[in-house]
Length: 147
Image (cartoon, rainbow, N blue to C red):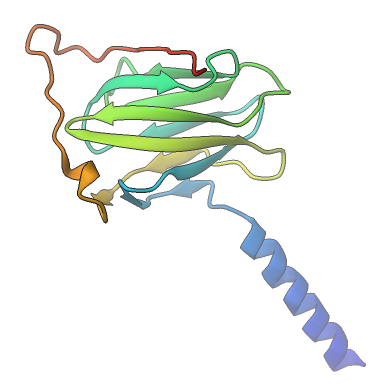
């Protein structure tokens, strides 16, 4: 009976650990896939990209407030505007790369800091380069409402 209890407790702890996400992470991102970021209402999350951010687009601007850091143009601060926010997407142009993020509200999982430490691509489509206007080198914030 004791062995069964230890096995049960071990499986429970493994299951709890498997459901959690790292609050501070340094992923290598596949540019051909979207990356999920879990955000708790009332808390912020900072995402650091390898290159300065040029443009940010939000699927549901009524739900999510992204802010490019004035201190480090590679950092993006994310915060839900309301406690009943819905999942949305975020498209970030950083350097010559385009990142697609799914921002998912969660009361049990939260990621405080995500530093993209590397990127790769399994798709020819995401190897395209994107030109940056030489007139406006300052990062710009673009908010678009999706249909």
